[in-house]
Length: 169
Image (cartoon, rainbow, N blue to C red; front, side, top):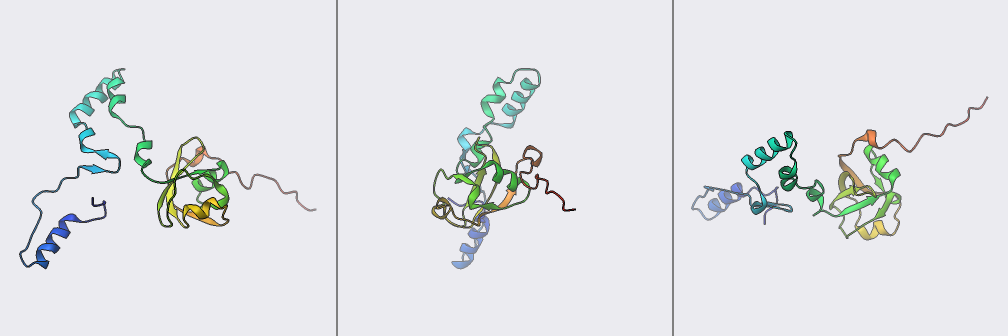
């Protein structure tokens, strides 16, 4: 299966040029992406009807077709963060090895990893600078470069710089 970065239309033209016959795609249809499959899709009219019912107080239909947001990232490896690390990340830091509390499944250096709070809330995602075995050894220094923060910084008060240093007179 091709990922979203593969240009299938261009590939068809290039293959046609390579064999000297010319080629193009007449039709291209995505039948799946990540954990989502075409057979579980709903039509826009079904979605529209469910939204209309929800606006009038009946949410059952809408709840039956809207997936939990966690399904979007469940195919990616994840890292569970200490609260202080989650706070640091939403305020612009990368992830240091000391901020990790769990690694549910292994990943390789360069993998995209999801960063979660201990309660399973999405903080953001980033690129692993080391493989999961090095993170698990209590490695010091940066282990993930934050690429995208999705959590609201207002929900994570900064946990550093809150102590007052007595002034010297």
